[in-house]
Amino acid sequence: MSQRRTRAAERELDLAGAKRSRGRLCEWPDCSHLGEYRAPRARDQLRCFRYFCLDHVREYNRAWDFFSGMSQAEIEAYMREDVTWHRPTWQLGVGQQEAGRNWRWQDPFEILFQGPNTDGRTSAAEWDQPNQPLTKTERMLAVLELGPEATKQEVRSRYKELAKRHHPDLNGGDKAAEERLKLIIEAYTYLRESDRFA
Image (tube, rainbow, N blue to C red; front, side):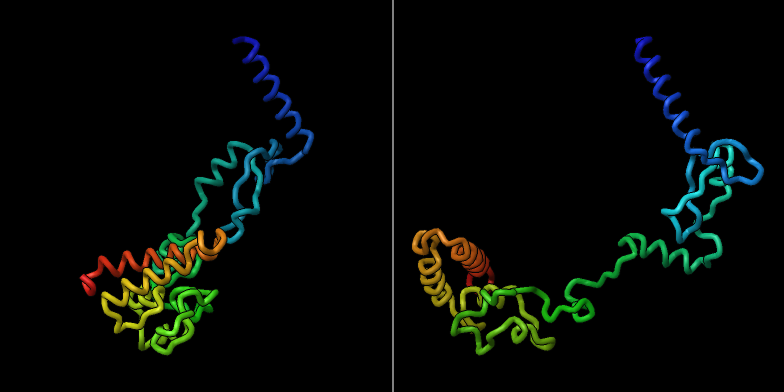
């Protein structure tokens, strides 16, 4: 136990010696101690530091006021923005145009719009017109290459047809076919359990 204490004390002395050799003095006026403790320079320079001795860093921290010079409204706005790390946010389904997106959900490979029964619409951009928002049921019907007027029987027969066509065993273990089949199964399961086709 005493050897451990001796090693720890030696390590502390080595660290103190290394700090002294750097020669960084406390930045407090008229202080000649080592500046071993850092403190931020200003509110807008939190990663730039001033170095103080222990007594002066304590005094500096007591006097530090992050919100100094800000009004109550500015402080509240800052605290609200701090919840999202001061990054822009928007409600789900709103503001994507400002974010540079053209539709609410993305289908970069146009997988969901490859069939003849997509109500004449051939791309996600056409499906996602502001005055024609898609419901989840419509999206699931699009996966099965069916339009919004599809019946329960059409959903069932289209599911069987697509499941056979995209089964990985019939496509040489193709990963794209497997992913497409997962989408088809998810869509069929949702539609089968939805109120519209009950």
